[in-house]
Image 1: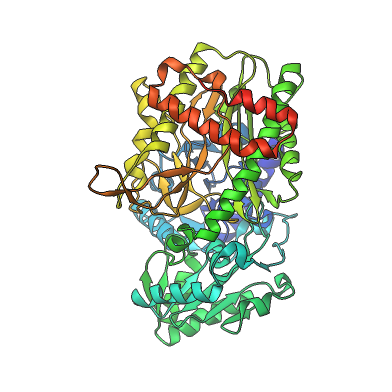
Image 2 (image 1 turned 90 degrees about the vertical axis):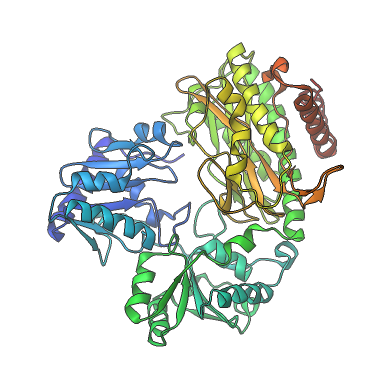
Length: 601
């Protein structure tokens, strides 16, 4: 596990940044958790928010002024941020209660200059910052370089992982075919070209994978796709592996990263119409294009939706990956049952053991995210990550929340199970069963075309709401195929989302409940949106969800009286599928454990 900086180190870093801002005449500076590609995971070179504040979550923004500072996080990180940040120097604020823009408007003075790095903010984000500065009478100023980089003495270098081709047997469609399809979409906007800045879009479009960030096989790069299907790819030449140029073909031209600016200028000089996703592209790209004279057509990255609709090869790969992963997880859970009963087991040891079972498959490429291994009260920290300081024992009477996943060449997994260590309490069983009812309600729903995840979110919360309970995170996120474990545009959440659920999309089903200081509960399967079909006696075709994840749900935590017969039947049928599919893949000891773990209730 990573070694956290001391409070003294964090204080020195903050003072160093403020001194640099003074030299530049800046009253403050924006510090988002972002790189030039706006990805979920950033390479160590771009981990500026973590270096400055100590906060290691996957989403957050700090605003550093000369006399005060604040860091804004969502509901997943309200507990974690207070554990990691020196709250005497930086005030943690829940973003749902106080927006960064609102805070800026309140705390900047007239004439103050607020700096930002245009590579780390989107045009939409800059527009919001500008409005906040206008309300305060302050000036928003793009910095030509990042002031944190000037005071970060041991900043790691940019990553240079090799970029390789992704086999057609997994991708299911040639890159040339994808480029032709997306080029048609670009032309219809109508645009002459689109600038792609999200590495997962580039990876999908060109059938390539990389290793520039942890947990996602992403090639950090930029691309311009033209309406005639030609593509220019901007990447560090040190990343080019043997055979990559031949794989890309003569319609894809490779350039050094420093040629991106001149290429954008060329689009502007020809007054080209450029499709740009202003919610994900760097503000630097937008500014360069508009300054050069290009006409911006604001629209979604054209790769995002086609990438979300998995083709039959990708679906088959994801199914195989989940069977393999399920067997590894069952081997671990059988081991855990004995190890926890003996005592002396801690969160880090358990997490490492699970990884060893996945590695034993011989197919593991990486974990798909840092494992959340939370015992007792640590399980109530939604995106908890164990370290030497926080590491807890798995004690009798506690719940153990384990959220983990893997990257295999044929697919990406993400699964959460909550496990009783010893005998659970009536309260734990009640809360667990309410979460399970929500999980089953979502797993079994049938819905027509045009339905979004926002329409379905209430199904996962209804049983909790009846008891005056809830959880502060979304219910489901999209998942890529050997790409990002969090993938848009689909989601299941209370937040408005106009993206409809379509066949081939993969999304998580993960309701939860968290009692701060005591325990956390989450049950997560990945599910596939099925093809529409008629229901006997129905009038409209309906879609549904097919569970991909195969792992027992702890029946020791189920209060049977809270389940209706249909819910109990679903659980029994799910467990029968888990048992029948995985028994041939595990050893005799795990087979015996699995039979008991999937017994009918």
